[in-house]
Amino acid sequence: MSKPTNAKILRREASPADMTRAALVRAALRLFGRQGFDGTSTREIAAEAKANIGSIAYHFGGKEGLRAAAADYIVDTIQTIAGQAIGNLQAPSDSEAGDPEAARAQLFTALERMVAFIVARPEAGEIVQFVLRELSHPTAALDRIYDGVFEPTHRRLCLIWEQATGEPAESEATRLTVFTLIGQVVYFRIGREAVMRRMGWRAIGDAEATKIAAAVTDNLGAILAARKDRRS
Image (cartoon, rainbow, N blue to C red):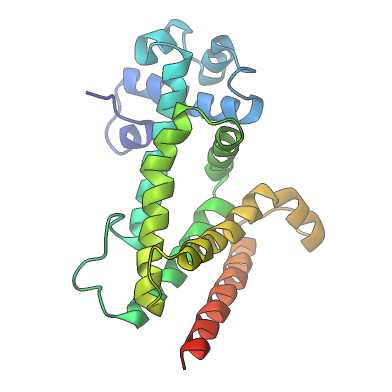
């Protein structure tokens, strides 16, 4: 049976062992994202987590197991955020089917919540850095993230898009459109420094995230309006 992820541990009363395990996962997430897997030693991870180096082998079996645990932490965290924004990641319920207005509203809510997490939450930066390294040099950790987050979340958004527009969920056009919706949000995280310089912002906090959310939802509104005009 797999051990609980850091995010799950935080949702219940944690024992000292749980707290050590969670601290190691977060430390690995930060350091692997910042320095890469090969560029990070277990000694550095233990020091960052303020833990005994032997606890890595005890909890994870070694450095590779810790990378897998960091990937599982990402899956658990984003599944929670996505579930709040877009509901069941497998398929829409019977009550949702045939309600284009509700589906459109869900798309707007999903983008707003993506911005609130990806752009405004500091821990999202650690997650994005880790994922970008995995995308550049894929390992089994990326398989866990893709299967647990990327594919089901994208598929769910495609189903909502079909409800909103009538366009087939698994058509090439729908899948590409959904990637563009997600991609514009992610850019504001990976291009954070450039955005702040160009916008004259000293930081990106809640106020700036609200402005970004308005811009990306305006884009969504324009896309949906264009689809509606095309059908009429």
